[in-house]
Every structure is written in C-alpha cells, then in structure tokens.
Image (tube, rainbow, N blue to C red; front, side, top):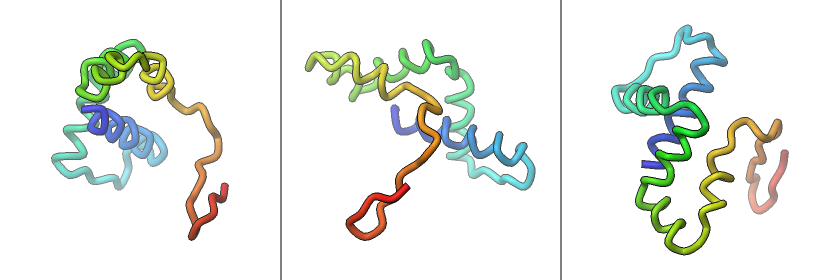
Length: 89
C-alpha cells in the first residue's frame, strides 16, 4: 500500500510538472494517482502509511518516527543517481 501511495505522489509530481499536458496514464497509474489524491494531506498520508503492513510492522518494532520521516515531501532539491558504484548528484 505504501508503494502504491508513493507512486501516486510521484505521478502527481509529473502531472504538475507537465501541467497534465501530453501525459497519458495507464489504469494502474491513474488508480495510484486517485488514491494519493484522496489522501494527499500530510496527516492523511501518514495515516495511510501507518495502516499499511509495513507501517504496522514499523510501529510494532518501535520505529514510528520512520513513518513520519518517510512521509516527508519535497524535502530535497537534488535527487542522487547511482552511476556504477558511485552516487552522483
């Protein structure tokens, strides 16, 4: 579920970057985007992540803060890229 929600966020970013023009979505991509859009606020997103199987496991193991960390959006301006064995920005 957390991957599906994350995919919806990623798709939302692409749609915003292209103003939705010339972007065709598969049914799966559209479903992920609709799911994300329904729970787009940070508080709602955190609840989605907490209710997922991985979220419940993190809570049981005492890593509840990791859910809030994973739910952050647009925190970094640079996305690293793995080239061979080196990370480049």
